Every structure is written in structure tokens, then in C-alpha cells.
Length: 372
Image (cartoon, rainbow, N blue to C red; front, side, top):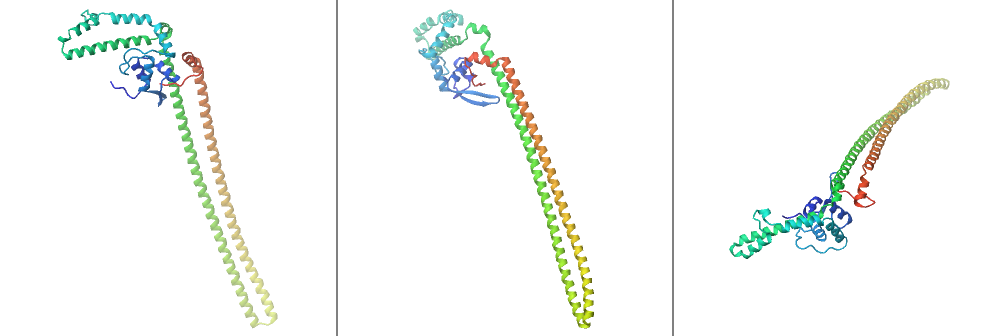
């Protein structure tokens, strides 16, 4: 069976026969190299195959899948102390099982009542009567029997002490706490995702409102500018017409004076000139008054257009301000909801004693990083 280059904690526990919390504790202490991989709701550890093989060799684990077979090497340091304590705690059970496995006659397994060593020796002595294929099959069966016996002994050594089993299934409690923590992480992730979606919707509304206001303001300003340009054009055309009328009046006055001077005497010419001048002045004043009325109307229209544009701009700015206030209130409500939810979860966790369990289990003042 070919193992992958990286194994999860569950796979490593099955391959080595160690408990999962033992592997996680070794990872947290730095004795076992591993990397983190993100998964929905948290992360998991991936252990390189070579690092796991080296760790198992240091712990004295014998596994055919990892290529660790033969006599158990001498342990040093903390591993030796741990192995000695484990061996002392499980010595009676291991001795009984070892004796039952190594001394028990093969008849209990095969029904023939033959000792494995005696049977193997007799088969070797009479190997001349066996074919090569039968001899190889017999060697393979004997090797598999030895490996199974060693793995069973190692499994019994790694089992928790009787006091731990009676105290309350440490592994089950640890799995329950990990499941609760993963559920809390999933809830936090869902709430965070919903909050980001809400903020995205609010941001989209603000952007749409800003674009609408900018477009309407641009349209209003363009309309006001066109109105002012039209009013100025009308005022300029009125001034041009008034100047043309004045020029025409003066030309008429000049021609009339020339005619009067040619046909009448000085007194009559003076009287006619005064009369003509008064009449022309009255007509000129009438034209000027009419022109001023047109100018005042045009200016009034321009002022009213500017006032209406300013009022429209004020209304749009008020709408923008009210929308921004609504967005701020919504964000404040969401923030307050998140704060209350976090306080509630902290109270529930403190009631369940998750932190106390972690401190008593790991023997540390700080909770380690969790994994699936």
C-alpha cells in the first residue's frame, strides 16, 4: 500500500496507532512538522510522510506501512520518560497479552494444537518435502503473524490508563469540544459573510444614489446654463435692435432738419426743429422704456431659473444626507448586533468551561490553535 506524501491527523493516527490528540500535541510543541490547510469553518493539519516516519521512529512505533520494523531503538530524553511511564502503566496487560500471543499454541487459531515455533522448526527441518512456493507462503504467513503481534502490543501500550478511562473518555470530550469550537467558527464565518453582504448592498445603494444625484445635478446645471445663454442672446438682440432704431431716428432727424432748413426761415426752422425733436425724444423714450421692460423680464426669468436650480440642488443634497444617515444607522445596528453576539458566545463558552478544559488538558496558560 502506497501512502500519500501528506497525511491528515486521522490518517496518521491510523498508520502509527497513536491517539489523535497525541499527534496534535506534538505538532503544537514543534516535535512534529505539519502545515495548515484552510477548510470551511477552520483548518486542518497536513503531516509530511517523512516527518511522520521520523517522529514514529523516535517514539519507537513499529509499523509496516511506514517501513518501521525490528527491535525498538533506545529512547532518550522526554520520549524515554513517556515510554517508561506508559510501559509501567500498561505492563500487566501487555505481559498477559504478550504471553497469550507468544506462548499460545497455534491450535487455538488453526485447531491443530501445534506450537508456532515448534511447527515452524519442524517445517524447516522437513522443508525438503515442501515446494519453494509453499515455503515462501509459510514464511510470509509467519512474518505477518509477528507483525500483527507487535502492532497489537504497541496498541496496548498506547491505550490510556484505567484511571483515565474511568474518569471520563478524554478523547470523546476532546472531540466534543473541537466540534463545538468548529460550530462557533462556522457561526462567526456565516455572520461575517452576511455582514459583508449587507455592507456590499449598502455600498451599492450609496453608489447608485450618488450617480443619480450627479446625473440630475449635471442635467439641472446644463438646463440653467442653456437658459442663461438664451436670455443673454435675447438681451443682445434687443440691444442691437434698439441701436438700429436709434440710428434710424437720428437719420430721419438729420434729413428732416435739412428739408426744414432748405424751405423755411430761421424762426420757423427753429420752431419746427424743437417740435420734431420733442416728438422724436418721446418716441425714443418709449422705445427705451420698452427695451428696459424686456431686459427686466429676461433678468427676472434668469433669476427664477437660478432659484429653482438652487432649490433642486438643496433637495438632492438633503436626500443624499438622509440616505447616508440611514446607512450609518444600519451599520451601527449591525455592529451592535455583532458585539452582543460575541458577548453572548463568550458567556456561553465560559459557562461550558471550554477554556478551563483546554488549560487542564494541555497544561498551558494559553489555548493552542485549533484544527479539525
